Image (cartoon, rainbow, N blue to C red; front, side, top):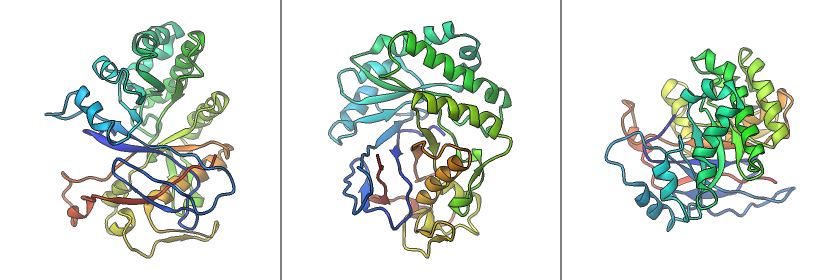
Length: 311
């Protein structure tokens, strides 16, 4: 899902409400974990979506982000105007290789090489491109032909980066939607859908080899929208609610966001990738446009969440 201006992407760890301190963010975050068995590292950023009208110029976006101390963004393409605007800003960028390019890029590494040279290498080092998201929400989506070409495209992009000596500077990844999961309640029961597994497993094997994390687009409000009769809106909005208890892990979740992240970890573990890090590549809450009760509750000015990364 591409948003119309800014939403968030976040690195995570196994969550559960008993393990994480509170922190809040709009454009700033503080983090001081109460307890951790390992060292703690974290970062945060925003997705810079541009499907809308009357948007500020990219130069204005830079002006907005820098005082807010936002140092990481993701865009959904490799728009040269945006990349030029962020030159010298110090803000790290994940660019997107759009879905419509995957079939062509999958054919041969020479095509990936041309794309990388034009859209990444030519802007380095002034623009700090640190990642390429190959497609967005491919697996689990309706275009099965893209399922077939996702891994070859990712391999060709990584191969091009390697030949250019950029593979240690620019990460290759591919964000997924919740549609890749067959079951996510309770979180410990989550698995990948059977039809997704033949494509997901080799993709995860490749990303393990090159050190890339698992990117997930986690939207609690979509779960509420799809099943408002059974999903407590307060559970989706980080407000007071009874929460959910996972009897297998003995973890209590007082919000759906944490449950969705831990569900991804559970699915990875069952697939044989228990050491893979999960990154939330998109999240957000709607403020307008959905005809649902209590829509005003989505207009949260100070969003309280629990998040850290165990390194």
